[in-house]
Image: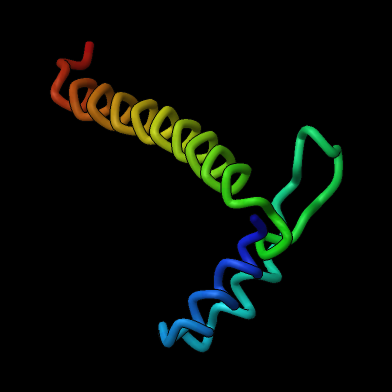
Length: 82
């Protein structure tokens, strides 16, 4: 089910939808399977979860590299110079 439809159903059941959701739903994500951008609202919820996890894994890998680089630089600052 598309994210847009899920939010409409939630709204119909009385759930308050934050006012910025329309803007959030129009943000696009590049779909590798379709080879084109797709708005988040038009994404199937399963696709959205997979895309989120894929992006999060990449972010965690980058965060780890940055952390290791910072630690390495801290270690180099304490080394003796010749």
